[in-house]
Length: 111
Image (cartoon, helix red, strand yellow):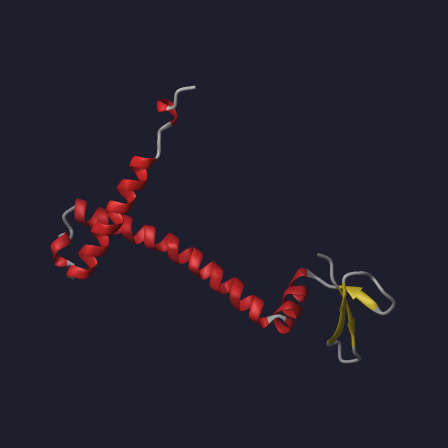
């Protein structure tokens, strides 16, 4: 979306428009984000929260893989972890196994 702004004598944005009008100028992407942050702070919070949640799920998978690797290399024993952590690891493994069993490989599909 292209944004045009009208500025006061101090250079502050006092109006926005999606079309070019008399006294308005095109703003850069950085300026548009700054204006957006001031006008829609809640939308920015929601976007950041969404991004954080998305990266959280990615990090969970990384941590699961790291734990698996440390156990496989005998750096740690699963039993050294708290029982609650062990149970969560077992549950995640069970869910992943169920999911992978439910997926039919391409070479097994008959046409």
